[in-house]
Image (cartoon, rainbow, N blue to C red; front, side, top):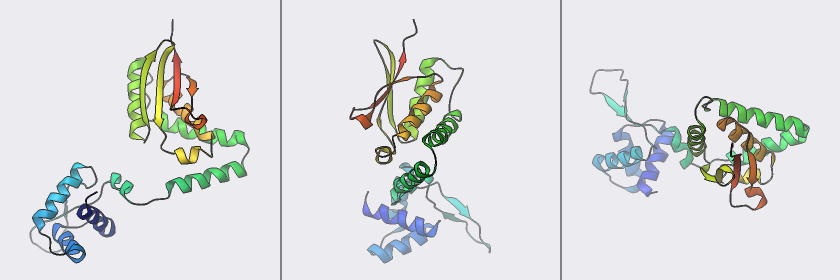
Length: 209
């Protein structure tokens, strides 16, 4: 990302909200003189990228012209360092240490069920459900697609959003299958798995003759 826009994100992260003038002042302290016009240009680019929200009016305690403030969107959180993978790995390791395997599986099944139930389309045609499942998975960090083959329909995932964790916690692969089955509304057959060295995690819905 262009450095000035990176600084603007950092300023909004630190301040929670900021006016154009506040951003100009903070940027000038970092990189030297910069104009409000230039800052507005960078903010529009960041808004287009979905990282900065539309400006809102800041309440004033005294009469005067309204002040418009900018804030980060939820999506902007991905631009800053985090340790979600480490936290997830630690929590899963403790679950596996403290609970029997069947209980761990039940908890992860419950997570998948809760995720999918908020998004499933139980009464829609299969292809509509597949399109919806792919869109949902894409929105949650997976790279997914579906296609027909000689045996039926295959839904494939080529990117797992917690790949680093699933390498040490194969129970997450079972959770993914539960998620896919619930989103589609019927059981699938797993026919490939990246954990086993395959190019994708793929799930087959056999052809209904």
